[in-house]
Length: 294
Image (cartoon, rainbow, N blue to C red; front, top):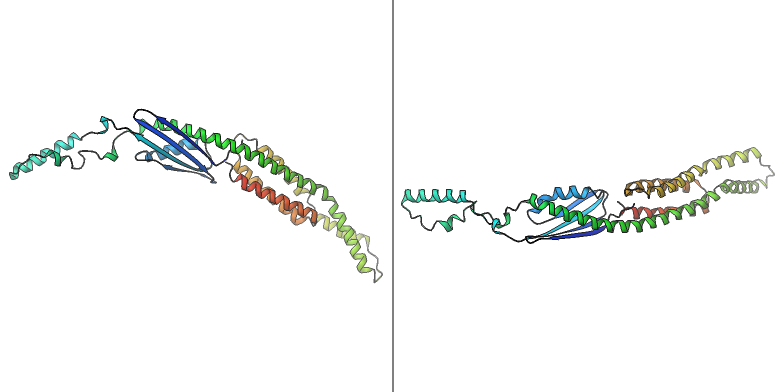
């Protein structure tokens, strides 16, 4: 089953105190890369986000954006009584020692470090919110997966069409290749007869056979044709894998390029060269397309 590396998914959750939304955008990448944008202190959960994402996605860049709104409750605002008491006792002791008034201390003491936590560091616990966040993330991943599957099915049909196009061109090459040596023999015989006609010299039959045999051996593309046909069959089988076979398809496409190049370089025939050009053009389309397959 093919999966696209691009897609979008989102999910939301809301309660009386907390509203969450997660958006996921998937882009192409040879490896898995997770990018998280989240407000404080939720950015500290980046490792947990990536752990959940890796369970379902193998390749691609995943951009995650978490939006969160929390209604404050009375428990969010606390005074550090220990720090406050310590500051008051120390200030009163110093004031008594120097004969200074210690009235109206409270407003000044509240501004001292550690007495009142800053608003940005309210101590709501991440591990309490994480089960909810994980649930929303899994739902967003599910929605992303639906889009990736739909795009993957469309790409699969297109890839199989390209595969069949290559098979058709290869069939033309297979039928044409046995005629290459015969055509070379006829051209060679005609050319040599033309050169020797003026000097009245006969062609040695064994020499002609030897030259044609050497050419036939050098231009024999039977093995390359068989290997390319085997790769095409394998290509179709890989498309049926349960896991998205992007890496396998990349490797197999490289092998098919190699065989096509060898056929083009060995076959000294215009028609075969034309078919090879068409095969390589279609392989290039396949290579571009599978760059978007997980």
